[in-house]
Amino acid sequence: MTLRIHNTLNRRIEVFEPIVPGQVRMYVCGMTIYDLCHMGHARMMMAFDVVYRWLLELGYQVTYVRNITDIEDKIIKRALERGITIRQLTDEMIDAMHKDIGLLGILPPTHEPRATDYVPQMLDLIGALERKGLAYRADNGDVNFAVRKFPGYGKLSGKSLDELRAGERVAVLDGKHDPLDFVLWKAAKADEPDDAKWAGPYGAGRPGWHIECSAMSCAVLGEHFDIHGGGMDLQFPHHENEIAQSEGATGKPFVNYWLHNGFLNVDNEKMSKSLGNFFTIRDVLARYDGETLRFFMLRTHYRSPFNFSDHNLDDARNALRRLYTALDGLEVPDMPVDWTQPQAAAFRDAMNDDFNTPLAASVLFELAGELNRTRSLHTAALLKGLGKVLGVLQQSPRSYLQGGHALDEARIQALIDQRTAAKKARDFAAADRIRDELAAMDVVLKDSATGTTWVKA
Image (cartoon, rainbow, N blue to C red; front, side):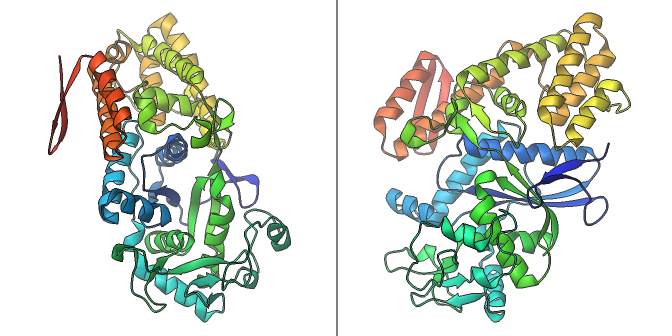
């Protein structure tokens, strides 16, 4: 069975055919990096980690690009609030992101471009759009994209311009010809710091969010590539705008396959700070190990709504323990997966059916049941090998089942990082609560100018 994926652009399942046989170029919209990553971010990065891993397993040479947006209104605001430079803030948050998602077993992409390194390419794209009459300079100094001058606008969302215009709630801003027009270059404001603006042919300013991804993806992958992914919330307007400005500038098709992961809910409600159900990855890692969290997310199809709850996390932890229990006590050899074996073939067919990880995971439980009966090393090797494809079952079973030292350290470090962040935000009550929680775990903290270390009491 060949790989078939759901293409948002055409709203149907399609056989995957890369532009260059044997090679895949994939771009995924990454983080706007002003704070710690939350569970919605984990959901997105896990979804495309699975895609990346399976493409590699199929033998493709994959160039995977996941960008970092390191200049944006929220970033500027947060840096000013904390009295640090934008670069200091974004470096700190990028380091935190890497630590957090590393504990989830998320592989690093091939390239991780930062938007601020590609401003010249953004200006080149804007210039091309202006020359083609698709961009105009507004009275307030901004440069905007003229949506109604691009004939294909709306093809990703499947809506006409009139339908999109009817749902537009934002009044026409100064200088905009139409509420759907979007900014390509934002003129600098007097109260913005110097590190939030660049010189250019349109005067001092900074790029709009949408042009960043077009410039980075085209610079690293070329003007026409295979897969573009991101959260379902980015389908409109972000990805719609990417298509318009990229195809408008180059005159070429932009992307062949668009993939979008489903929304994350908490106890069947949308995650929101106002609802008090907002969780960072570190919040969750303070109570559950990274592999449990990873396995939890694997049990929901990437396009389906993902319901986050303690009950479901506990269920995932118990399920993962059942798999490790089946492997416990065996010296399992590392063997390549025999894809002709019936369970392996069923696993492969599930993954080739639009990355159906819940069905693929069910094969792991079938193998675990067989292993409990037979204690066959061949079955154990297959279980471990298929688990590796999904990024699980690679620890020592005994270590995992006993809640080993590595898990203990990961939890402690997650709490320390939360406490450090709370102190920087001057939330000393939260910092004290975390210190008390660590003390209850017999962890003694030692604060110094270079950071916080710990020892077991």
